[in-house]
Each structure stands twice: as structure tokens, then as C-alpha cells.
Image (cartoon, rainbow, N blue to C red; front, side, top):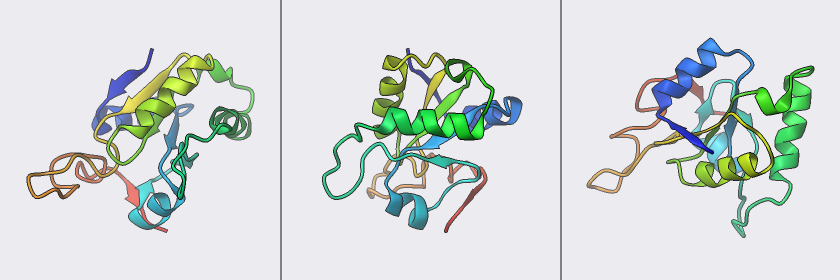
Length: 137
């Protein structure tokens, strides 16, 4: 089962559990130019131009775990998935649960948050809105 967190709750888990892995599943362009949380591991769920789910996504996450959390039991590492607003990351999180990972979280609101009445992101909620650490490339 995928658990849901808001960005502040996700940040607390990351602070309390140094073994936790924050997965930014947005596209390369979003990750580089819009910005990303400090310490996030970039493993895109979908990529331009076809926006299909990457069939190697779970294998790429497994490789990241082997590289970044050697010696850990992969199924025990908390995996926190984030996208722009929480939709793609939910699908990515479900794929991880289906592959046997047990501590998987979807970060609702995502990096940019939901759209406001003017259809702009970043003014209601999201990682950046809450002032959590991030950077741009």
C-alpha cells in the first residue's frame, strides 16, 4: 500500500531516517530547470516526448538503492516519491509497491503544488511553497 505525506511530513521522515531515499520522478527538464529538493535522487517515471512509464523504473530505483544505501535491506528503506503535484509520483509509488518495496510514500502536493484560481502553481502548497530545501541546476 502506498502511504501519502505532505511535503512537511516527508521532510520530517528524511530528517529522522537518514536511510530514507527521496525519489524525484519528474522529467529531466523539470528536475534541472524548475529545481529539485536537496538530496533528491532523480529517477524519471516518464520522459519527454512520449510520456510513457519507463519499463526500467523499478530496476533504476533498485540500482540507486544498491549504490546509495549499500548493505541495507532494500525493501526496508523508506522510499518517498515526488513529482510536480503528486500524480505521477503516485503511479511510480504503486509500481514500487507492486515490486515488493514495503515502505513507499507518495508526496502529495509535489514540488510545485496544486494550481490556484489563476492556474498558477507554487502559491497554495508544494515543497517550494513550504520553504523546504531545494536548488536549481
